[in-house]
Image 1 (tube, rainbow, N blue to C red):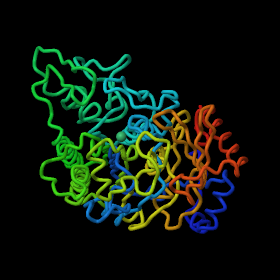
Image 2: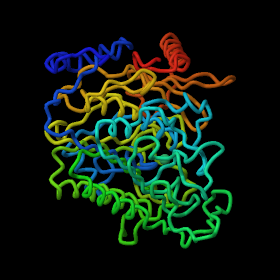
Image 3: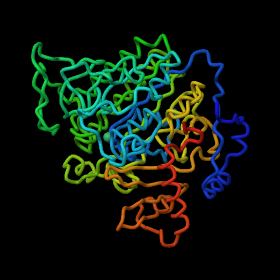
Image 4: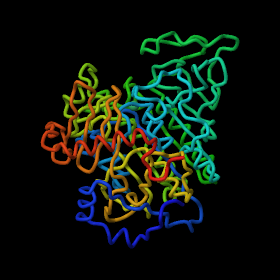
Length: 489
Ligand SMILES: [Ca+2]
């Protein structure tokens, strides 16, 4: 491995608040990355990554939501594992973050500065020769599957022809099996996809999405559109069945929920949340997480399974959506105390709930304030599997294994994280500071987000040197093509 071995003892002894503060102040010091200490494990662990959609930092009880919002299963993950408070999505919208999670690389390195989501019929966004979470695990003999919302594109440019096999897709980047939908619930073709096959087609008829991918569209050539209220249940049934059928081998499962992205269409048995439809949908998401955890319990797999729960971007706080407005008026701070939400360049767009559970490995009931990025999952799993990361891959992925497992916080694993908003604004966090890069004629902004979590006070004038240093690092990181040391080709 390229990373120098550092003993667990040394990390523990170097931990503590003073060491962390000194490291943050110095900007550039980053701890050497650890190698796994369980390589004698009898069987490699199962790995489950659960990705919620548009699920805000403050939208579960374990992240400060009122107890009247019922999230017992997410709370259970926090109680039995570690809760991160400074986990960042690389983008404040869907597809770019999904690319980042899957590849450990910032999406703008491949797609440019556009920043927005891809269309529902976009071609596959991930290069098929690139290391992904799935291909990493598959390469180690894992069974691999993806369930739920894909939204990473299917087929090749110029985009998806629904009348042809849907390849390349998930199975071209390392998944053995896929069951889910192409993009958002309202997007055509309004029917499930299994592997490369669009299900429910009318024989002899062409499939045609009518027409503009808006909430009112529909699809010709399929027998019956799926009912959006039952999507989450369908994904969960398939996922829990798959776990059972594949539990004789180590497995990797990526479960991408459609909750709590609109439409807020939940199973009718979820009723009565004081936050109305939005709250009911959150409670269904929580229930689905619980189904997966219960399946692990039933099969006695929980002790050898790493479970990660997070979200692709912050929650929507658009007051023009009456269901969102109702929940907020009823007292739900969707993104906790953070400013802004989905799409934005503010913390509410990027900072995500991030829960990690692995009994016996991840200390139960603990909290980490360390900065991590969702792109770090790939390098961390590579550490878990003891696989060196090849150059030219996982370019923005830092191994967070130490932060998952150590009792003491220790030094940061990364000295900065870059964020990219839907309007193509970049921001960079270093230590407690966040620089928002503005295009002329606007001026850059600097916030101390530890002291000013709401990003209310731009203090760039008094900290011009720091801002210039951060701007330089941001520009260099963009130009260089990678941020993980040694990741260049
Ligand atoms: Ca999303």
